[in-house]
Image 1 (cartoon, rainbow, N blue to C red):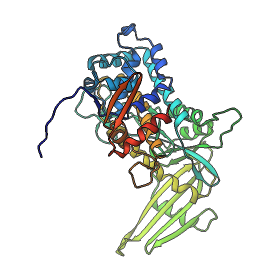
Image 2: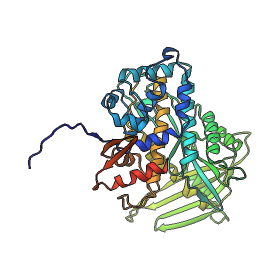
Image 3: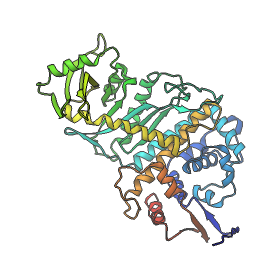
Image 4: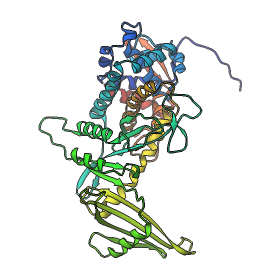
Length: 457
């Protein structure tokens, strides 16, 4: 079979789902905030601030972040209609405007506009299912640092991270086990994970409570926040501010100078205590679970510690060990529930690595496009909003049985949304004031575009 390739004047697009992305943005306070912002170097621009930002968000929605990628859609009529803009900036204009916004006093305005719009988006559209610990329902608030490798560059702020690569070390906060991005604290690579974290956590807790708060007069929320942190943030400051924000916490302890053998002795001494439990899942392996109380530091009141100690005297194949292997995991917690109800929920904190991967690979943000630290920080604020819009769209697709995925899902990966929804091939037909997007009958994902668009009308 021989193929021929010819051009056509019909409006064809590879982003048939982009109008859904644009539809959601239109319901947020973003556009009005941007139009009201002022940049000294661009007081009366030919291309408005809103058009610049919406154009870049449109790129991020397709998994592109490089400025030069905007050139491919500058003459794309469908791209403009989907985002409801008149003009698309050139790559030079896009770069210059973002640099100007980041350097000017309006940087705070733009950053606040992104965060405000993201919070409004989550409050309006996010379906957050709580986890249950004992008799109480909680919404997880997971915070962790994830280095971004920008090696072999001379970008501002790039320095050695704890992962042994040169790059940045932003602090990410996610709300719910669906993985909604709550906030990003963009930081230099060399910055210690705890530096600046208390202030960041205070802001995150306040914003999370606003998102989860009563949506109508007379309603009272029955959900509580559960702050989960890893051992890098083992600090009394974090415990204290969690209590001040009326949030519970589950923080992995940094064992520092504590030896595993010491915790094994504690576990064996308490194995018959009411809150303790021990099982032997196989010969040569014993798992101890229990609790104790210790002061995190001198002068601090004792805090509850829940622990799991695993002792192995032989391998799974039956090979006896000359020296028993002892594995210890201990956690600070404000929860009063049984140990067996608490311990299973910390490993779920590790799901954050998947969310980090979606930022870095699905949105192609591992290596940031600008050489200026302030501009890259602004780009991360833009990415936060794009990430959540795509997450909301992905969660909405779970309600459609025609989606051709067999396995039931708790969340839809960002790459799946970009590939199957945003980048759905379609033909655009204009008739009067109506624009019709026609997709192939053989594409089962195309059938959900109309219902999704209507759902966010």
